[in-house]
Image (cartoon, rainbow, N blue to C red; front, top):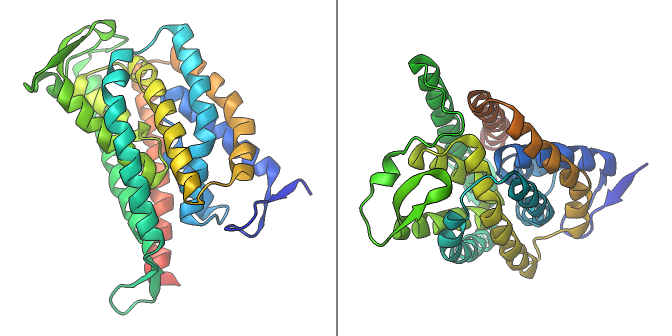
Length: 309
């Protein structure tokens, strides 16, 4: 009862209330931290709902079209973020999402790999698991370390920007970021990072936000609130383009994406309001906890895939 059959490529029925509840949670995370929530959604679809990796990636990107525009409208109302960063990174992100989608298609067609004496394992599962574990582990470590340093030093960031190491990169031309109080940053460096974020979106269905947030927080020194408000416009454009490319390869299930969007469109509004209310250090610790939990889930799946089958 209250299930939907998601069609070819998935093949089994999934609970609609469960998908909507997951969507509510993912939307809340997206609105709270300015990330698309794909670092949680893609693994959940794969390991909890049994969705094939390529369909999970494409459908996760698709549902974020609604989540990201809702978050963008909320942050624009709150006047958070620096839109100049989004504008500079957009071109590289568009190229990157195409590269990531092509790599996903290659892995999807690669079949299985024989690793040592173990059983054959799907190449796409192994690559995605390893990439998620490496990316999210680094993100969690840096987030906890920064929060701990802030606590030990007694410095409370609040909404202030504390310029980070990437603001000292000398690679002209430069651009000023007046909304966050940074006088000069390298335009080429921002463009290259846009390509990296786009490639991660196309390959992993993560929207790039889980990479973008640490870059803004620790590379440029943004506060959590301004970092979250900066990422949502870039996220929206990236996921829209990525969705069209993923759909062209047959990796998008509209039924799956729409079921999740039922909850995520509401959750994103609540998440953005929560960010406006909570202190920055607490937001960082919550974010790190979510990332660490996701790493544990993916690590268990990889262990089971390689050794416990």
